[in-house]
Length: 323
Figure (tube, rainbow, N blue to C red):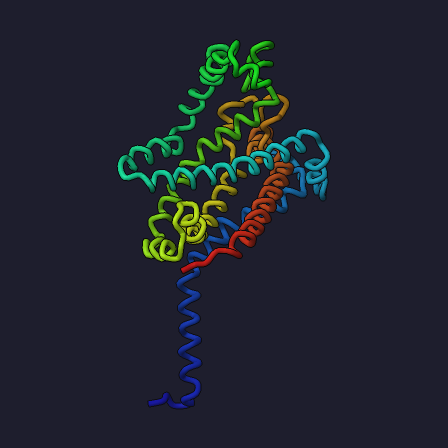
């Protein structure tokens, strides 16, 4: 029975309007939190990046694009950009490739899978302080096991075949953490060492979702070798996992901070050779109380992460099929 003064056509409209109101009421808490936690800080950083603001300063001066101009013209910030992009370009493909390889090897084992999972996942679980102490000792120029192991090759055929080792035997082994030519590569190595175990676990989870029937069908179609089964079945089935792994690894690579702070607490390594963006944000914004320039680096950091994430998703998702 229709309500007096209301036509039957208005009833569905009122019901739809009521449902929309209920939906907005239900999402209002999450929407409010998203605005307060995500959007407000980003907008605040954007505004501060155009000022010379610092905590407890008597006044704030609007400087326009001066902070951004400093980032692209001063040598220390050029080193920051170079170190950050080098780290991302080196760590992301190698850690993803090693994670996939380790996952395939472990998945093919009949026994001992859990032992190898634990061994490869240990760097992910290791505390930063313990890891830093261990690697500082291992990379010590005189008592470290790395240089001691390399010295065992001096005077052998390996020294003649490997010119770099021959130069080290003649002029002394490298100062891994004290030489600007090696500091960034040490950070890259630790990033790969830390990251590929995490990627391995993600790929192992992806491998469990590959249907066995596909392998049987591929064999019936002539895919006899392991490489052909990987190319025709495993790799396409791991497409969604690969998109997720590459995205997460890329963002984690841009966020590298802990290893730089632990190994180079004096500030970005010798001659700023390992001066990463996240460490620069911490140094400028927190240690030196230069909120304006710190906010400018933060905005640049967000833009880089957004651009790279969009590019890699568009490139990788073209060949990805979600079931």
